[in-house]
Image 1 (tube, helix red, strand yellow):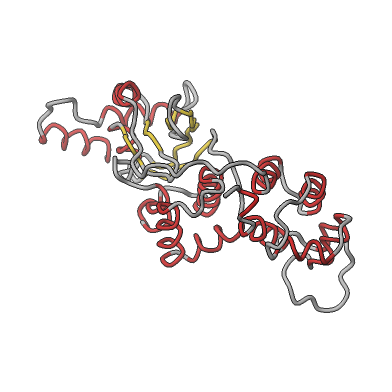
Image 2 (cartoon, rainbow, N blue to C red; image 1 turned 180 degrees about the vertical axis):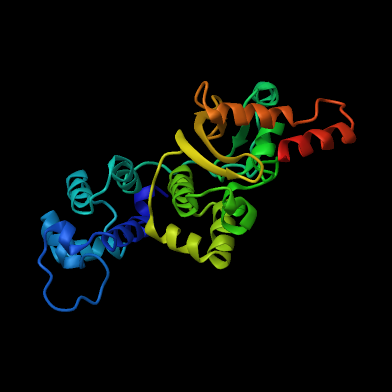
Length: 291
């Protein structure tokens, strides 16, 4: 089956994005009470220069081969940014689906060694946001950053993780949009189905964000933390693709040089026990950090 032979994703994406565009943004006068959020189907069709019947077939999955010109027009009407536009074109692309990936993702040994020796918080993230490896400084930044954790589950289901982010809903939205971009058209992958089903039941916020069909590359950004010991912390986050893998990323947090954030991160690193250090010395350093 090709991506264009399963039109459900395309229809769901168009419907979700249509509901996010207001008539005012599209330049349509509002008369009377509107019963639907966003634009009506016939309004999208009119603005895109296609028939209402054809657009209805697209949303309902009855047309499997829309032209690039039609998709570009719809991207313009739906006010898609470059990432969402590329995602839309990919949904309708007539190309073979990628083979089903194995459930187990493996960190290259050299990458594991690099993560362990980096003097900055670092971890390895799989396509489904699983934490595949993490160094002690990353775990000190967030105790949920440990091998076997999952960023989606932690952010949406763990109040302690949510408290780390002053801009929690913004961070959560970016995480979901990055997850959608990472899985692409593989939303029928068993691991994806498991995560989306679990989080949709447990988290109304995840359910709402997932329904938006936002797409955002997993890329670098500035992240604000409210750390229980360090207080406010502002770090740059890099997400680097690990060569030879299928979408596994190396994630590194680093402060601006000479900043107060750099001093706080140095203090956090100093609180970590050295290899072989006894528990009493570790506890003493932790107490010093907390005071």
